Length: 145
Image 1 (cartoon, rainbow, N blue to C red):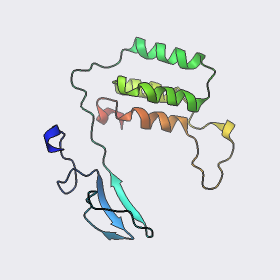
Image 2 (tube, rainbow, N blue to C red):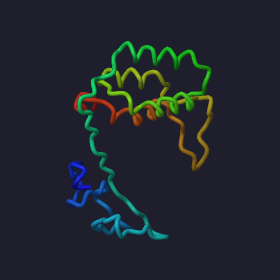
Image 3 (tube, rainbow, N blue to C red):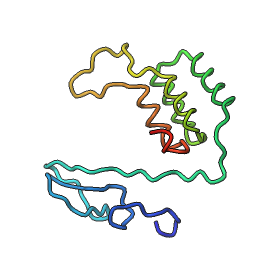
């Protein structure tokens, strides 16, 4: 990991992405090299996602984003399928904050076609899924939040 040149953003200088780890309210220093998830108790943590380094990539043009929207808008696919298509090309895009907002607004906050949420099922929120998908592909995070 050190040789890869990736900065260490871990809590304890061990390149782990989980911070504030606890098991049944008892904190401990995590090392995934020797940690095995126990069969009982509550494992809690904060996940820290490293920022992508875009290098010399330039932001996606508004024209390309408009073409992408047109293709999605004209597609008869379900929202989940459209999000999956975006997931397949997300690594190719570098977005500005206003472009992230545009993409998020392409989707409704919630799709009523799926009806009431059943107990134990996660609700389908297309707008939240788009945000999760593209947040880390966006420049200038301070302008996003």
